[in-house]
Length: 198
Image (cartoon, helix red, strand yellow):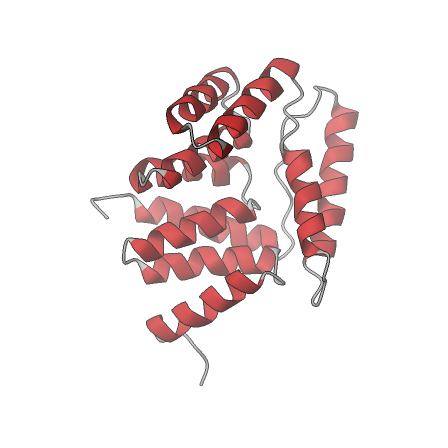
């Protein structure tokens, strides 16, 4: 992996697993008031409890609601940058998406979704090293970010790092256990790494 600091990422994945098993959440920026931040954190905790229930068929709806909360920066100008970045990403205008997400990161470095948007864009253009670097920031700010963990796992698998991919998938699976694609990937990688129970 070209000297990428795997030990630091392994630590972040361990934190993700700890949070998945019931550790406290790291709150995202809200509208600046302690009350709003507490309400946001409580709502997220409720949604993650629901998301972890086995057999939930509405897991996508719950994930979407979590994503909507994560996307609230508390600043209209920052929300606009995030929106424009996402629109450019959906339009496959990756250079413009990177510009918007980079501007968002410059103005709000503690807002995980700016880093996640740019990580996703780098991932889409095959810049896995840059993407993984940004995912580090996402997970440091929001260790329960199942989308970032899933993307990280795919990149590690592509880069022939199945053990690291499996750690990321285990963390994602503990957060959202009803996702078929994650479950299938866990099974495949456990067989590949010899971690499957016989």
